[in-house]
Length: 249
Image 1 (cartoon, rainbow, N blue to C red):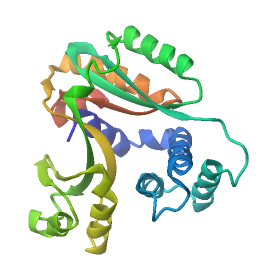
Image 2 (image 1 turned 120 degrees about the vertical axis):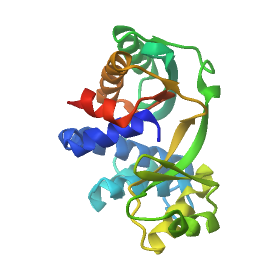
Image 3 (image 1 turned 60 degrees about the vertical axis):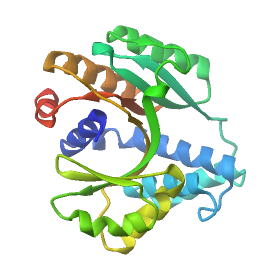
Image 4 (image 1 turned 180 degrees about the vertical axis):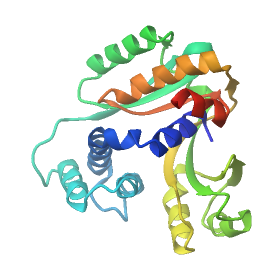
């Protein structure tokens, strides 16, 4: 699991995510709207929309909110701002490569804000293509390795999963992004509780960090996460879970 995934998990356990649920729902709604606008409002026929809706359900977003977001994307609801996906590339403390996903209605404003946050926390914004080659876009379903065995996850392989990796107390079931919905459905159908299932930018290699550098990096990641337009932050850093626990306090 990427360091940021561990960090997000730790913050969730500390209930910090609940304090940001308003921002979380806004981001999820934007993703649903963008997916519906690009591929239509039929969840069965639009894999990107299916993933966005499932992620919203996992976050306990009300059904009415989900439907309103779909309606905005298809034009069936009230007029909405024209949001677009933007991917920013840069570096953080320790030379860590960062991919910052944003949903924005003003890319110039968001780009300037991201540049400022990176600079403020010891990083810098790079040119398009400067770090993306260090990552693979991958579907990842996360399952507890304490509750289940690898044999339990064979149903995911049958549904198209490419690999299963173990990290700390979880399995990461890896799949092509287009197959992630089917993989998630297979796990659900087998009664396996899925902690999360999403498309991520998975680093090909990871940079180990000492605690001081990791602390600086986590401050940057938190600052980016708190920006209204930023939806996800991916990095190629490797920080032990116990160090992240200490940083989280």
